[in-house]
Image 1 (spheres, helix red, strand yellow):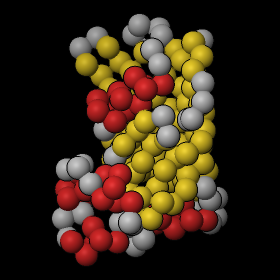
Image 2: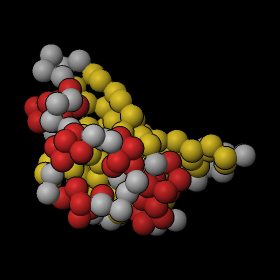
Image 3: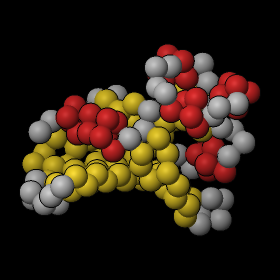
Image 4: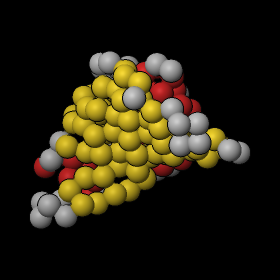
Length: 147
């Protein structure tokens, strides 16, 4: 398995992940986010500046993300801890323009126009096929190691 395949599983098979941040009092918060795009350059998602998530991402760039897929006997888990950066609303069409979830999450055009794209651009990840025993560590923009 390579990083491209792991990112493909995250984007196409899992689609939704739990993203964890901390607030200004260092209290943890976790919420589901749609994985808009995942590739060798990172993981891309969107949020609106009106949300607590946006405020927390502005205050602290460290995040953790996890997603799981269970199908028949196969259980796959992907975890990532890394740094996030804001790419802005002008990247929404370029990066997530063909993604049907943009309109589902933000059906109101005004909210959609304000949505900001974020990228987990560096970090360490872990893939585990819990039923098959396959385990890989990887770096966003880096290497893959079987463990």
